[in-house]
Length: 592
Image (tube, rainbow, N blue to C red; front, side, top):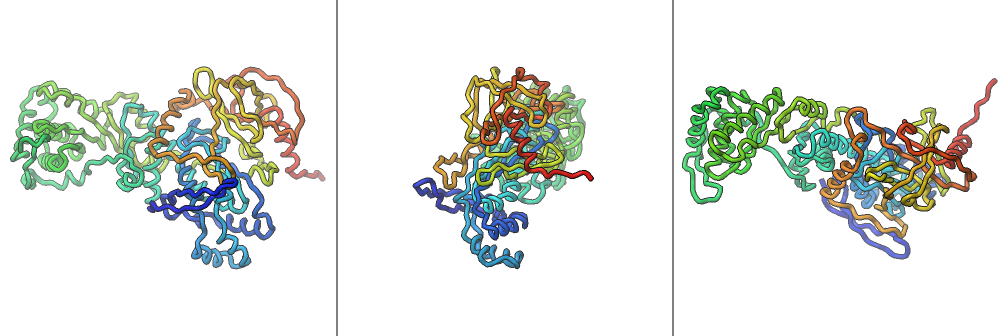
């Protein structure tokens, strides 16, 4: 992965401002990471003299993933990195000449010269909770250039938003008090899938990753201990050569830590309150635990299910942990990777509490219990319902592969060209695009929860607190309602001003994006966020497009939950305009 940066000069009104933004994290993200038809369209635009036409595109999705009613937006920073460093190199031009042999030479000269200095990008801040139909990003610029951004942007946003949402769902089902660890690198779809998953799972609420490269690249906390192979690689305690361990404060040295561990195991075995749990433990496992503790006395966490959790793993762990305690160290805990996790965590906790009571080791009963073993939302929810004593969950396959849903399905649609609104029609109403350049707002109710998201015309006056807005469903005349916001938040910010005079929003750190995600999840009404039968969040539209339709007033009732069953609603005026544009674009059939 590359961390270098490139500087480009961006016209900004009458001033020129040089900005340095790092290259995309993945060096494979180049202008050629696109579908061929983006270049064939660019050539057709160029040949027709349309390549400089000013196009406006919306990037959005149509349906929330995983059967839920919310999504978390990810991937914005990588999109900005991409356009900040967008330049087609000579060797890439050579390949395009080979791939498109019938194109004129002038087209390739045009490609060599283009960059994104005339492109503008407006986006919802990364880490925000978002909803269908609302543009995550609005991209404006020369139509041929913006068309070349479509596939890379979709590639950078689709998976990022999907896996961030998946992580957020796991966070919500696990609860705020539990530690979530991402263990998915070995099961991810390739190296880039693994790196991206670590980054966006952390953004979505996970606490740490096992992925060392992601820790280096993004500053994500690292967690990891040992595998079953480490435990089974030991045969007996005689394999431990260096048995010496200094105390945590450096004031003394234990000459034979192995004997100290064995003494503690004998004490545990002779204790009446613990005798019912086990008899003899596996000595090769004890050797592995002892060896690991000698290597990492400050970070001793043992995988206890290689042989038998309660008859061997937990007692052996306790013997080593108590020996460490004698030297001033505190063991981290255990990991359960198989079996009945609810039952085993409860039994292990009972054992730890008995140790604390029997030997007077304060806090031992609260020692950390981590569970792994192909966990997902459903298994964590089931554990919660059964009751368990797990403190941390290590989650891999189902998290990073987004096993429950393969893709988010973001789309990139032209909504305006040369100030003329455009619409994409379909027999499937959900695939009809919302035309025109738009502004997006989130409106909050009296209780502080977001009430609705609203799209308005770009030149429409800004929405105000207390303003009464009539909204209608775009295709169902009977669905209408008034909205009176108590607080108004504009969603789309300028992240790449291009040739405009607008101020560019700074790209926040991953930690700040993660905090935004957690804040947004906490702001949402609980019934929108629940796993089963969540209440749909409402997305509305209200335009003043007087060039295309006349003023008229339709009265409506207050906002009721039963008025909106399928998310999208429009103003009375936009209702007329959408149907006007639809009828003007759709061909008329003929009956014979």
